[in-house]
Length: 305
Image (cartoon, rainbow, N blue to C red; front, side, top):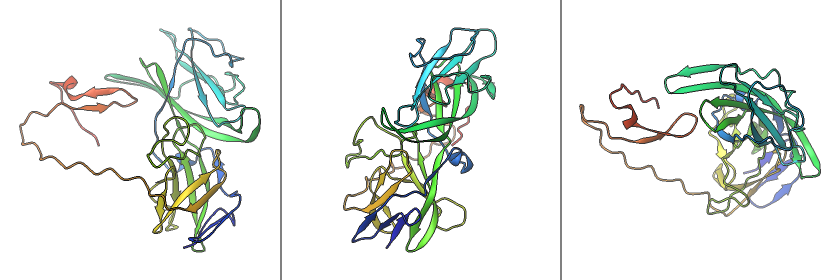
């Protein structure tokens, strides 16, 4: 089997690796949104103290709450947001789009939607194109436009965000090229997040999956995503992925390391007989937190899987 990533960029065989720069993976600010992929909610903690990096702000009605997030690992990767949430009045959100501490460049602050349902009040989702910065703390080697979305649940001390961007390129298998997409799910613009054999990060905190998606049938449909943080099997062979932090370069190399073991599905319990009282259970609530079935005793509950 012969695998190439990018246009004449990387060649991988079972006996040799010719590693060159893969330039075909280009940043699409709305790549995952266009592909209608699901997302991982990423909480951004809110704080009352103004970050020292905020240099320009709009006029607030109430005392603002601030948040900080990163997009990349370069010198302008730190971004800020502010929430203006008066007790009586219109709530607004302001986002630092360029990584320069200016909260006035992201529009008028209006939320796109405001929905209220029993037990939940939500603002958003608001989508922004934010400048990613990659390199080191003092040297920017690349930058690009990255789609991010934000939404807010009333009463929580966090605001949630998720990525809309992806890297688009190609993977060539046995001389045939197929469209490919790289997706990171931490909404931080970093694609290189390798795991050790024990499943722990090589460096830093635990991360969410980094997906390689391939249209292997060339029918415009993506195959199931492959988490390339660990060794993975493709075409009957094992590979590891070497990624540039910004996702612009990818190298696949044969490996003898084993993919992580997939957890066995628990044995299905017998169905409850009609009329049996449903046992209590705990589940993750939409937007974070948890709920218990017992909280809804006496009410009609519909489970939507």
